[in-house]
Image 1 (cartoon, helix red, strand yellow):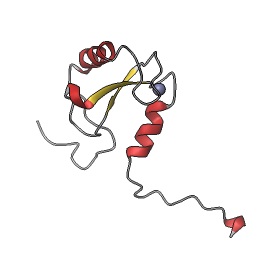
Image 2: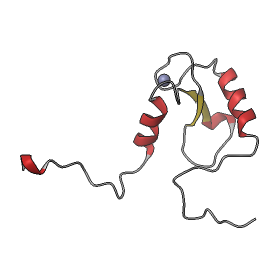
Image 3: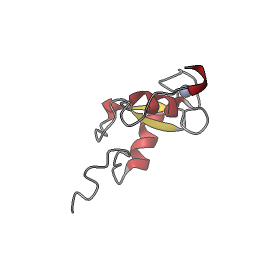
Image 4: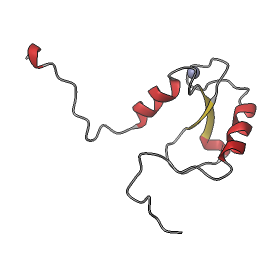
Length: 91
Ligand SMILES: [Zn+2]
């Protein structure tokens, strides 16, 4: 067991029984997305991004069916290495 992924925080490591946890969270939350409040959530989100896979840190979210997860993940990510958008023609 080495920490081969050390340094790569882009993708959080998921536990082996993730599919079970995921289903449990989805059922707990009634498949209701915690971002937009709509039904039909098909994914589970880490409220605080990282390796905390406890129930308290997991909530149902729209993953494939709506961009809720993408939006939240983009908002969570610190803006490092991503220069602000510029429109040279407007300067
Ligand atoms: Zn949603």
